[in-house]
Image (tube, rainbow, N blue to C red; front, side, top):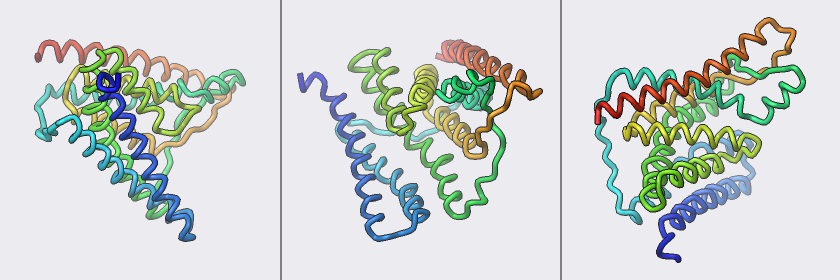
Length: 255
């Protein structure tokens, strides 16, 4: 039993150790009496580091050798991925519990632009972490390692669902758990189609960039933009479907 499910157990062990180690570091910094801003900055810096430790652990256990060469792809795929990132940002917001609550009150939530630089050094560290570090590290961990290993041992459906659920779970947003799960499925399915990790990193980076420079606001049904926002949600849903359909066609032709 244990040998049969060793890959899954190793993955769970790595994820638990990552978050235990990160939690221990934050607890130790809080004991030093540092300000909340300093603790937040330390948290942003250390989470990529401890995640890399977890990645190295899994790479050794699974005997995986990462290849960082940039595979050439159809330029059309790059455009699709950039557009897909924007559509996913919009689409994911509609999956959040608060979106449904808002509609029941004749309100709709949507994005407005914000300027994170007003928060000083914290925002600079956060921007680097969100747009560069997190996309690279998380795509290696959840798509290149976890998804591939689960798919090889348990099949495609299990790999897609479980790797996406783990991706959602570690974001520690239980109200938005379903939204993160669907986003994880879309990320993973894209990687399954293209098998090009840097496209996933690009997708993830653009998604995080848009999220970083936007904030959520509620718009009343009496507002003229209300109907437009609802149309944008519908367009994003249809856009995701059409893009993934075209990506599948392109990758079939390429392969």
